[in-house]
Image (cartoon, rainbow, N blue to C red; front, side, top):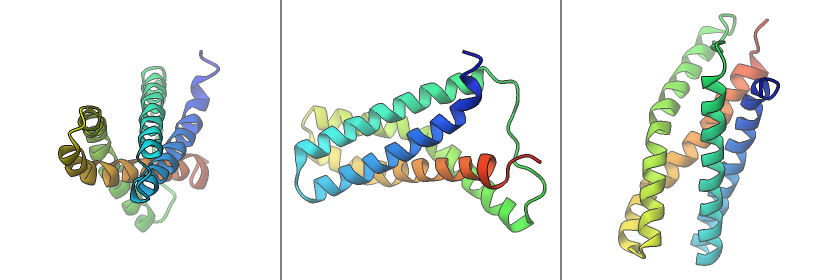
Length: 146
């Protein structure tokens, strides 16, 4: 397991990207009134997000090294990074609850409630997926430790 841990941030970024693609595809499917495709895509996105959460928790429970944003980027970049990280973290805490509620109402065929909460869940979940990739890129690719 110790050999896998260092690669989990890269796996997590890939899972976030896949969740983002599935979310957009699911939204496109429902706009095209393709309900069964929408259902399958959204369940897939949920499954990918559950795997992401598992990998994320395994990584953070098994590493003593806290990945810090380096000091060398310009101040404006640091401000943007920390704003996105903060909003990402706060909204990420809400996504599991929103996603489960949205899926529950669909499962129970409570369409009005499903649609009402999905209008909140979708943009928040998509934002968390996109900003998760952004945080990964900033920490591991664009501004890696020197």
